[in-house]
Length: 462
Image (cartoon, rainbow, N blue to C red; front, side, top):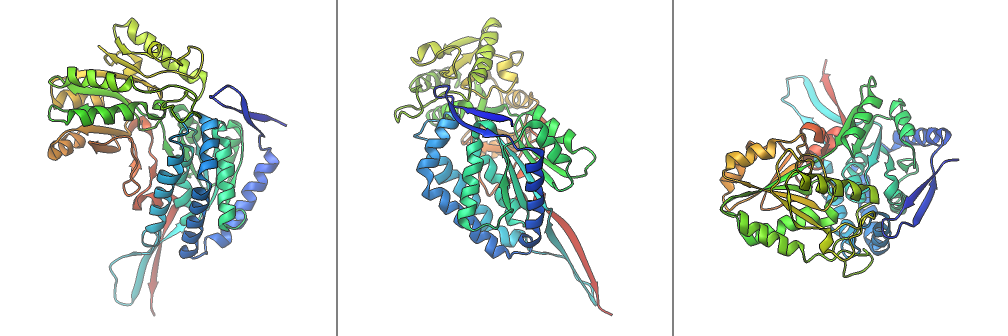
């Protein structure tokens, strides 16, 4: 028996402990998923939509308990955790349910006399979802809901840090009346996940996590000819143009950089400011970031909590030290936050200037509360700097000129272009990335494509 511990970043205590699934247990899970799929794939879409709605209602009714449990697991301040359920989770689930019937209907094609033709979308089978800890419900709902609506069964393997979220989702689906075997979860090792992907009873894999993790998923699937949807690293840029509303841009960039301690896939991780706005932007940014209250996330006054663990905070601290050694200037740092303690997950916001792309903090994903701000003299320079990255998830442009935002966005290598907004996933728009961010596609009408196989019907009357 192998146990896995969930250590809370709040105080280092063991918040939960679970036994990892054995090969025998995983075999039973996959067999149950395949058996349940025979009936689920023929269940009317209207019934699938009803079950998704009932699941969402369960989550909403239990949002307070779920939020407290989530704060203990990954450290986000309790004042913010209910929003993951009451806003983001339900918004995405209900939107995908609202477009399911139309998006999954037969595709009409030009007809020929005496011949009936159409394309039908059929479910793939069993979808394995490997979900991350930073937004454990939001990232999971992106794949679980469209996969189920499309008629697939789902097996969820959540990150150890948020493994109780998998159990919560199972309770929600059970309360909603989802048939046994259609949604299941496993607490499993990396090696067991690999064996699951090798298993012929798994028909698609969704992974959100690191670039190295994504490469492992693709290696596990090699030779199986199944799809692997990935959302991997990010180093999302922000560009503040000369015509930007400065006060608005400052407030939104501070929130985009430091919300959830910077532990967001699409957090702002580097900022480029036109030289005419640079000094005022930096001054305002630092003054606003200084107002964060770092502390125990269970305290309602806390506005920024600990990072997920001490190792993650140590990495960010090393980036800061290395940048300073290369000439970066720290305008705000953890020494100015009372509860920021070296060696712990508690790390206050850090703002650096005099940075460049030779520094890890401007090149490698930080996934923490640190930001580097660079001065640029033109749109062309900003575009070149934004594209100088191995990643491409989102980019935000702060301007009063929509045509300029579109023009810049067309030249920016990224999956999403924001104007005067950041760090938000709109379920009506496809969520995807380029380069080493991966090739996953989630949400929007396109979000069902990954979970279906097109089949052509060519019916000739004789």
